[in-house]
Image 1 (spheres, rainbow, N blue to C red):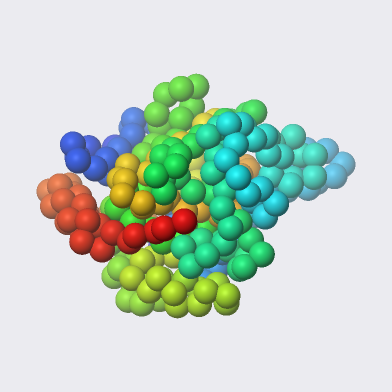
Image 2: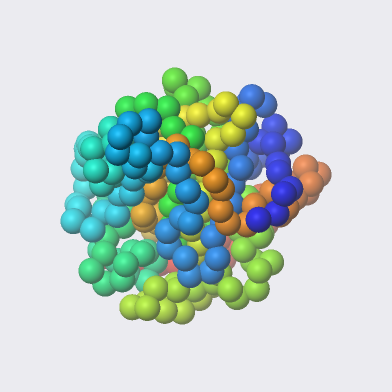
Length: 263
């Protein structure tokens, strides 16, 4: 893992596209796993009880097709008291755009002219969130909050340039049932680590563009991290002077290649 870190305070707001901005006291490290990996390889702090189980859980959406005003998940964490309330959640069957476990899987999505955003409210502050991001496009936005205050924003611009510079390794669906389909868009598992005493208790997935686009994700992983994994994204963050150009380029590129998804 690279040792280069970036602070959200060094990034800039664009009127057209938010690009990784946050209060200076919210320190986050973002990493990406190796190509084709659909789960985190990080480790998590153990509980301070006799069980010693790691404080981590995963929501895989496999049995949840449909739209939910609210859905409460325990993230399959075996009673380790992590829970999250999803609001406005849309879960659909796996296809070339998402579903980490293949044809029998389901995944969460914002957009598709249905639910443009959804949120997860946790029962306690956490320091880790990870998910398999699939079919990335320019409208994808992820916001982290603590007690209703925005502490970190992550946009497609933060990761698109990096994955594009990695050649074809992250392009196209890597899952066996849909291998190499949708070859023009990135797929990767992302890790978000709150550091330096930072934490969050709410996350919002937002699809800011319309016309049938979606923000696809799966394997939502939550917990209290112990060791980080993956390659750090900080080395790919552009200089502030180039951020507006990057944002406009992403928007233009997204408009040109916007997929049409009929359901």
